[in-house]
Amino acid sequence: MSPEDPRDENAYRKYRENFYKGFNNFEYERYQVPYENGYLPVVKLVTPNATKNLLLFAGYDSYMEEMVKMSKFLKGIDYNIYVFDGPGQGTALRQGIHLIHNWENPVNVILDYFNLKRASAVGMSLGGYLVMRAAAFEKRLDKVVAFDIFYSFFDALRIRMPYDQITKIEQLLAAKDAKTVNIIFKSMMANNLDLNWKINKGMENVGVQSPYELLQQFQKYNMEPIMPLINQDVLLLAGENDQYVPSSRLVEIDSKLINAASVKSIMFDKASGGDQHCQAGNRQLGFDAIKEFLSNK
Image (cartoon, rainbow, N blue to C red):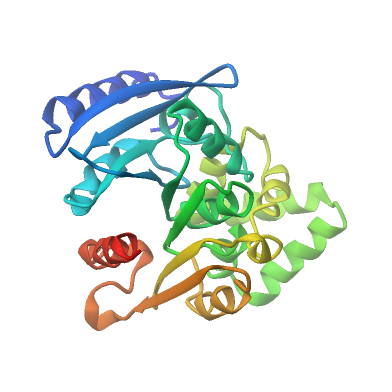
């Protein structure tokens, strides 16, 4: 449903009500952390006697409840887990808090609110970029996981478009030709359900009114300038048939994390069932790798 659909708000309310009625994988506490003119919703999943802290968040079209549910794969680790919707996600977006690339801002607010001196962080899907961005500027993070890697927003467009088409769009953006960019995207979106969803959802998330404005914002989401700033322990996960990120980016990111305390990279192949985006065909694989990484000293 589109945000304008009159059924949307009721469906959203019932979805959250029913989710928490049925959730019993962890003891949990719910919070509303003040942020801008609203709040970021947080669920703290409590592990008795845990000595460490883990932030967990997703990406482009997520609601935190997805991550709360997936946390069952992390049962038994020595971490209290803080799952939250950041700007542009779930309940935060519904308050008009729009998506930003500088993810250190919400991470800083969460760490301050709970007085966490150190924490690890896992970012899923677009969160694979957001977590790395946060790590570049928020040094209370000690271990970071890109689940999976997400090098840039333009990768997600490039992987589904002919090379000459995306090159032309990039040239038009450089020339600030908003009119032509919007005409091209209107035409493409009319015949491509996937692209139509990506662009419309993006405009909602970011709070802009045209594909051109959205692509201008997308240009900010890029790993290239931040990789030398990351000095934590890093786990990079990737699937060889990821629908949004070229698998070749794994080697590139690994090689450019020149100041990281350590880097571990894992490429999941088709035989494993983990070759899709965020190991969608075998989610256990990704979480097993994360648990092993977090348990290492």
